[in-house]
Figure (cartoon, rainbow, N blue to C red):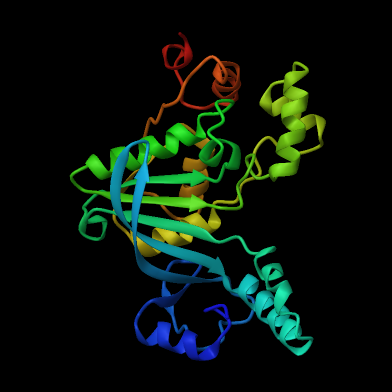
Length: 272
């Protein structure tokens, strides 16, 4: 039984303070009542102690999982249908349409005057497979290391629906084929009729409003669009911090395209 479906488990989580709901502005709302119709609500589950071992380093973090209420409601309807048809073997379908984002809280971020933050887009090929065609995996590992070493601590907001700058894994695979034929990463997107970058940072902004609030924070990024999108969402007190990691022969052309597109990368950041 999934904990976000079973009413008894849900009640226990709410009573224990482990399940909360926030609105688009990061304000807590009653988790035991239906959200306002048409309003964007996010459910957050945690904190969950999560010891991590990455790149030979050990970290102790607090994990929060988050998902939009609309996606939970759709899962609820499917779960009810599966139960009525005794389709327990198909419960994996519940996860197929849910983008579960994560917040990894590191150190005393809750009391930091200016926490260090990374909003990291999911990348199966880089984060999990260890692909060197991008710098995503090394960037994630470096962010974890930098935030853990920072006196103020901070957090990583991991966006699960951002594969391939928002185009999804299948389309990303197609762009790789086009890149191997000579196109750069942005040209390949356009050849498929897709935007250069279609990631939505609104959920990340809501989570930051909840976990950071009105405090200033430092953001590990080279991407001006990410800064602009977060500021447009009302997070005005953000200071960008350059975050270059994992540069190699296999991704130098990719990084050059990002530099030409507007990323804060100097020639010395990507040259041998």
